[in-house]
Length: 326
Image (tube, rainbow, N blue to C red; front, top):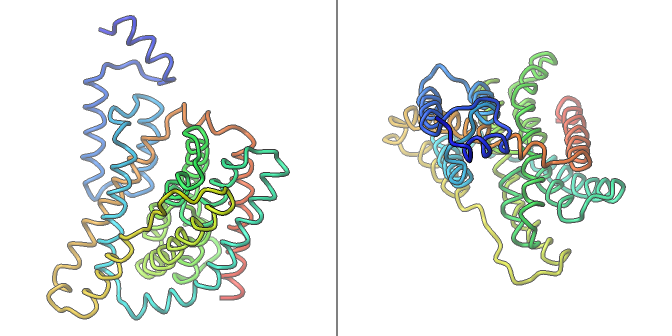
C-alpha cells in the first residue's frame, strides 16, 4: 500500500500509473532484459523507454546520465570492429565539407534565432551547439565551460532528446520514400540527427554501409567539441574550465584498424558488433526512460521552437546537399 507521502510524491511526478517501488523496479528490469534480446529494435527500445518514463517512471534516474554515457561510448567502440579503415576514410572525406559548413551555419543561425526569440543566452547556445555537433555529448562538454546552470542544461538536453526521438522514427521512412542510397542516408543522418545514439540507431535500420558512413562522419563531427569548447571560453569569458575531449573516438579508430589488419580480430568482430548493437539498443531505452514528464514540460515553448527551427533547417539543407551535391 502507498503511504500518504508516497502518493503525494507520485502525484507531483506526473506518472500515469500508481505502482509501488518494487513493482517499478521489476517492470524496469524486465524491459532491460527485453532490450538484450534480438526482438527489440533501437526504435522500439526508445519508445518503450518513453512509455516507462510517463507511466511508471525510472527507478534509477540518478544513475541514468552516467549509464547512458558509458554505454554509448562502449557501443560506438564495439561498432568499430565491424568497419574497414579504407571505406571509413572515404566516408570521412565525403562528409568533412558538409560538417564544416553545417556546424558553422547552425551556430550562426542558432545565435540569431535565440536573439529573435529572446531566449536566455546560455540556453540558446547549448541548444545550438547540441544541434550543430553531437547532441547531449556536446551539451555535457560545453555546459561547464560556459558555467551553465542546471535548469539551462536540462532545457537544452530535453529539447535535443525530444527531437532525437522523433528523428529515429521518421528518418528511415523519409530515406526509403526518397530512395536515398546507403551513402546518402548515412551522410544525412550524421549531419541532421543530433545525438550519436540516434544516428547509429537510424542508420543501422537502413543498412550496413549506411551505418558505417553515419558512424564515421558523426564521430569526426564529434571532434568539433574541442574547438567549439575553446571558442566558448572566449564568448562567455571563462578561461578557468577544463575542456572535455572525447577520447573514446581514439578507441573506435583503433578498433577499426584492428579489424582491417589483424586476422585474429576479424574472427571475433561479428560478436563484438552484435554486443555493441545490443548496448546501443539498451542505451536508447535508458535515454527514453530518462525523458520524464517533468523534463518534457521544463523545455518551454521558445527553446523548443528554436530547436525545431534549427533541426528543420539543417535537415532540409543536408538532405538537399546529399541528394544533389554529394
